[in-house]
Length: 135
Image (cartoon, rainbow, N blue to C red; front, side, top):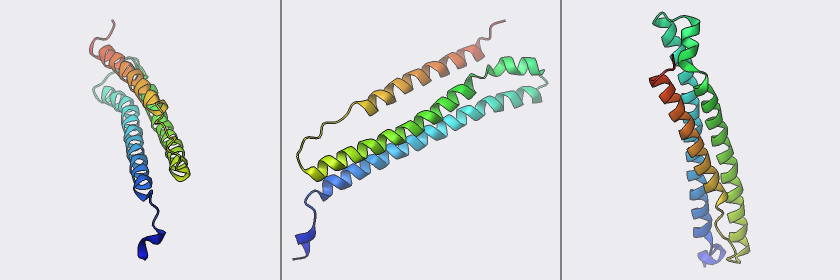
């Protein structure tokens, strides 16, 4: 029979792979978002110079926070890729063992949520400072 070699857990392996690829897509999106935010600080500085602001006025416009937040988000996206791979290999090991002992890890979700909360807070502070600059 042609199906004698078929792994009975093939659907589990494929599901694990789809989940891993979803996390990788998410990580790439986060990295791209971080890059855009980091470049936004440069855009603000250039726009200030085009509008005739002095260097002092331009630096007060950007505060450098977008660069810091952007770098943080890129690093976070990279970390998410690593955590996704670790999770993928852990699930793969449990599927191969066939023990049914796998329990979902909350670490990857906790890291994601904490990072989103911190990033959102930093971006909110940045936007409020640029809307209502202190004189």
